[in-house]
Length: 240
Ligand code: MN
Image (cartoon, rainbow, N blue to C red; front, top):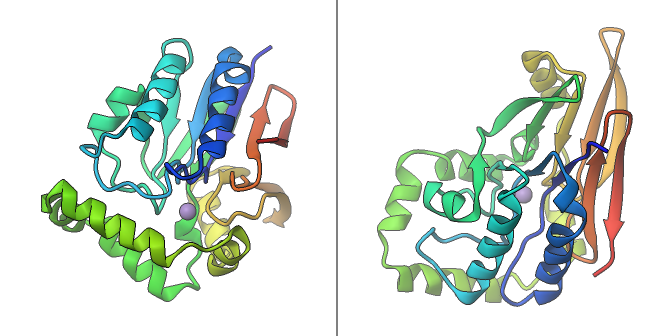
């Protein structure tokens, strides 16, 4: 049977081996039969550069690479791993897609994105987003020695040892008018995104058309996947 998987917001890190283990199980069993795997951002909790090669990052790279031999893997940047570049993507066998991308999913046009750009009520965050996605800021960051970037990342981790509830509360939800604009701009009636950690299938009417917005779940307490075949789209969880 033809199946396509969508995941996002795994927030993988070396100190959450249970999340990586769940991903490995998924990649080595279910995902093997897929037509494609889409990772819609925040695969990693933090990404300080493709040159930060550690046993942890290598374990993820290798698991993705192995799957990519038979299953195409596509990646859209999240707000945590926007610094992923072609070097890592090539090692992991993933294709990086633009931040908003329309695919043909079994005959249906679907818009994919991480989703942070929809949260426009968070003015401070949008300012940061603009800077972090500029051509100059990531380059400036990557000019810092790897050791310095590691130190900055470690300090950040110490101060933000927040639990999932706090993290979700911190992320503002999407602005409905932004959702509608994006869907109209791309001429789709289905949008799939992550980022907000509020997994749900939303339906609404727009110009007498039924629109659907599917929000992927995060991987903090369990694996969270969207399974798409020719007939169905269903959100599912996988225990750690
Ligand atoms: Mn995010």
